[in-house]
Length: 88
Image 1 (tube, rainbow, N blue to C red):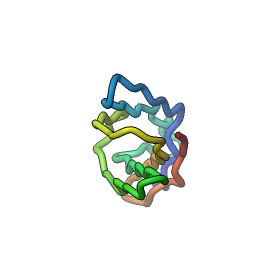
Image 2: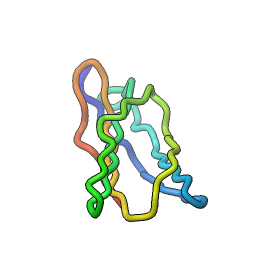
Image 3: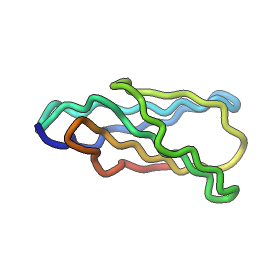
Image 4: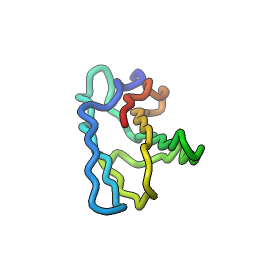
């Protein structure tokens, strides 16, 4: 086993204040993820929701206030956690 690669194809959809972040699971090369870590930060307010650990699912939804948010998603398993893939 080894640390999995970062998730692929992050996508954000918004419906009012409901925001859904989704991504594709990396292929099991070199290793399959067993969890994901999601980081959400609003630079203008300083709000940080960090280290939201999810089982091996590929989306999360949350109600967020207005603003621009930075997100990062990492893949992980028993060997470690990948570098995050990031976006707005």
